[in-house]
Amino acid sequence: MQTTATPSDCNARPPSGGGFGSAFANRGLPQDVADLLLASLAPSTQKQYTSAIAQWIRYCERRNIQVPTEGTPREVLLFLADLYNSGASYGTLNTA
Image (cartoon, rainbow, N blue to C red; front, side, top):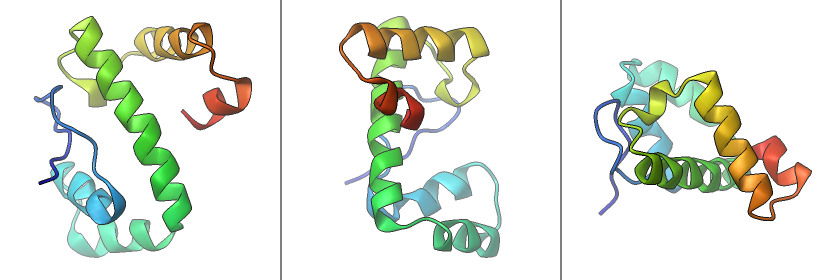
């Protein structure tokens, strides 16, 4: 069973594969808009984004950030620094 992160649930897991549609719907986008956005993402891109989203959600859980979709610029920068300090390359940071 897959769940999608919602603004009120930091413990949710990121979507995988076609689950991006649910993420778009949870943000209030009409289905035709979600379909258009999905069509623009290659499967490999969706996979790459899913990995970065999973890392962000785990970071939120460790830091008690309750609303991962509304992280402040400071929180995002601290997340990227944490990834780098954990051994991530600059290339990895560019996709996170």
